Amino acid sequence: MSFSVLVCDDSNLARKQVLRSLPESLSADAKIATNGVEALKILRGQSIDVLFLDLTMPEIDGLGVLQGIQKLGLSPKIFVISADIQPEMQNKVLELGAKAFIRKPVKAEVLNQHLQEHGLI
Amino acid sequence: MTHFNLNEDQQDCLQELINVAMGQASDQLARYLDTFVYLKVPSIEQVSSSQISDTLKVEESAAAVVSQGFFGYEGIRGEALLVYQPKDSDRLADLLGYEPDELSVEEQIIDLSSILTTTFLNVFASQIDNQMSYSAPRFLSSAASNFSDHIEQHTFNWDLALKVKITYQVTDYSFNCDMILLIPESAIVNITQVIDRILEEF
Image (cartoon, rainbow over all chains, first blue to last red; front, top):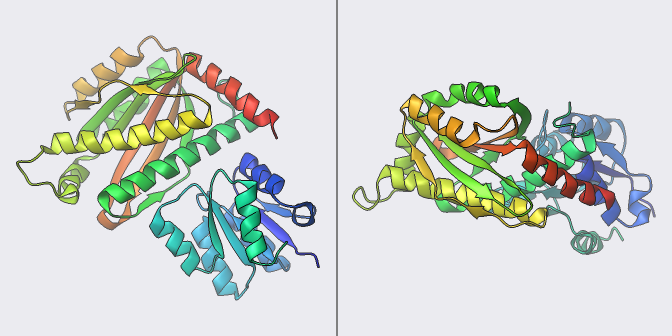
């Protein structure tokens, strides 16, 4: 079974760090968004199974994307990958439906552990 | 948009290093004040020596500025400024909740600034395989000339600098603190070399 994947981060380096940490089955056809507006546009237009989401971004930030996803009634599996590690922020994103909070810079083994837990690899 | 001939990838990498550092600094601030800190994308711009004074004139209305120099290996150095607006310095005193005679507001602001500056820069330095040492933080009062003179003293021999501005917005108390980092061109050249090593891995 293959999953459609979206990686949303305003940093090119951060997107590459995520893509390189993913198994090929998930990274090969992954789509990319550079801010929350782009992410929501993609999410509205096509079915996305797995979303890797940054928080601190221009236009619409990660919290805005999480709220947008709720409003749209979508249910991708969301993994927030952010440097904003405040406990309150971690709780907020989990309340807004994220499966996990992963701190930046992302480590492949940590990311893959979360993917395994959620049956994605 | 490029700075010091930083190409787009170098600029992007620098911004990501700053992101990780400010995330941990805001976490420390949030724990210290037992509140939540809202973060925005930092601004990074190149300024000339005359612009350093000019751009900082905006900050002259500040109630308090805490300035701290930092020094790493390989010529990496700069000046960190923590800028508090007048209305905020009163709020800050409430927020910190020390007994009035325990520590002065000035001492509290210095403490807080030092936590932010050293957390940010230690995390930043560790990402570029460096290690920072710091000068003692200095409290600059609201006397505008005091502030400008100080900046000129510490940056007058810089032709160009990179100015990084990060706003820590403490939402519960509508309290803002701006961290301004001024990094001279020579130090940026060194940072760029490290950035290139990071980029090579990708």
